[in-house]
Length: 320
Image (cartoon, rainbow, N blue to C red):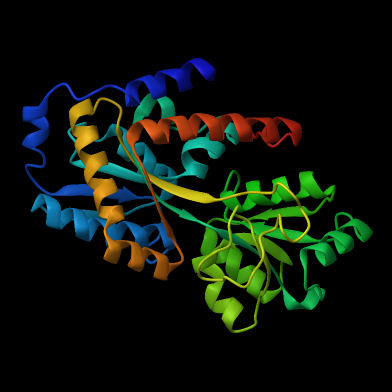
């Protein structure tokens, strides 16, 4: 996989070759495929940014929600002219492909990174019925009853699963993974008590935390979350070195001209630096995380190396 990642970085580092072509972009509305349901964290963030990009470009940026894998496949097959973009998560572009051998797309072959949009600090939550109030309590319970606790996720290779696999590896615990077809049903089952815990994006569980239907133990990211500032990180709460952050970024079909990719990347970073855009994203529970095309390519290469080791150690690869 290393040669492919090296190629990805090299492509992202290509300097603009056609300023006239970039200056003429866009010539019509730009469509962004979002492989997540409307109203979710990724969709909400993209709509805020799309509104600002519409102001810059004087052509509307349209957000179109579609089914996950099929949307990504469609994004790869779209015309490579900058007017067709894909918003994707790290689980779809890095960890999912490491775990699933038969995906109908290949991120490094089919796409060029445009720029990172936001990160989303996930939170470790438990159902009140298991009676734990801290990360140390949870680890102690899991060690007393190996294999008894179930954790939910939005599917094989999802951020929820990877974060919990890392948690188990670092704490020496063993719990049972219960995958669902999407984040919404996984949270519904967690709130209902059919599963006992999970690491979820803050926007998807914040209402349930505030209504005391879920108990937050700690945030999974390196730093505390602005939306839950009183909550420690998992590293602070007893698992030193633990860090997991969900991220979303824009991608274009692989043959998109480099000068157009760079134009979109610069305008994306400009939009994320806008104070009002940043405020709206933070209010959603998202954290603006601008990164250029080249920076995103390097970040993905590092992310891939990190998670490939965990996938091998825990034998997480599946034939699907």
